[in-house]
Length: 353
Ligand SMILES: *Cc1c(COP(=O)(O)O)cnc(C)c1O
Image (cartoon, rainbow, N blue to C red; front, side, top):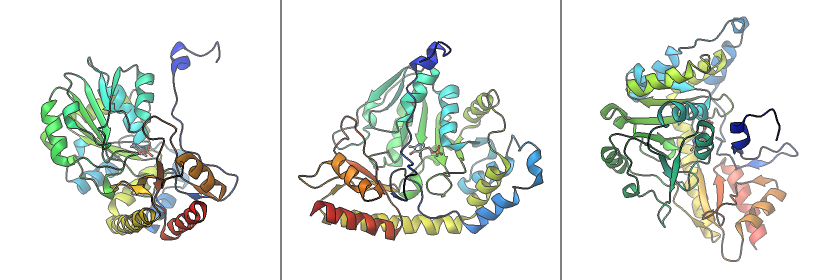
């Protein structure tokens, strides 16, 4: 509290990122980072961009990065926007596209940044409960001249909504902006990019932080109709035109072009996720089949999620526990390397027995 804060600052409820403790070396399975390093090509591009040229401003337009994204997804370059992490892309999206006459709808269990942006930008919102299977029921989403946002696959449930359902949702809501936050789509969801070519009101956001091993570089992007993208550019250029520094532009472009490393790491992660799901199930966990790089799991009978989280932390393994309605019996466990997941399974065996 301070007399120097504006009323809006007093009223904010800031986002709290997953812990990044420095007191010891943890097996970090709590923030859905990728366990594999960025490729040599990406690191070389970042290093090559880190020279005396840094005295000059970076390119505010970033057409090379935009073109690499446009080519990968087979869309026109006018349909691509990028920012300093998809959190910034989402922030600009809330400001540019989601403050409408009618409220913004999003699931009660989803990315906890959405309500934070609503407060920051003064956007009225309605939380729509997931059904009893923790799924989005598209029949629950109907709004005229408003907005809808949800992660697909959803976090922390790890469940994906089929593309056909998203298209039905879009057709039912032609006068509202529909944002599909695809932070995890590469691990098992169907991207809605196709819909951005058919419908002017669909925006897809993605990130380099999860499937492309670049959380620390801070790059995210969005794909949508040229009119939605132009709206985002207007807000970006009213706030901070040089979103990405030169190393980030170069690294993200190289990453987008390095399809081979991307696919290899994605496939390895999915294989680790699948055996880890089985190993947790064998230990008595109830594990939701995951379309993401994490699993959402209920511990075996007689074991409480918060206690398990603390016991794992004491053994040097960090997972995520949410003390929140409906999900306080679950743990969210990011998928690490095979060795890290074996370490988790061994630790759980010794705690549980
Ligand atoms: C991780 C995540 C983001 C943010 O990603 P950054 O690009 O690192 O800002 C956005 N949405 C969801 C659902 C996420 O899990």
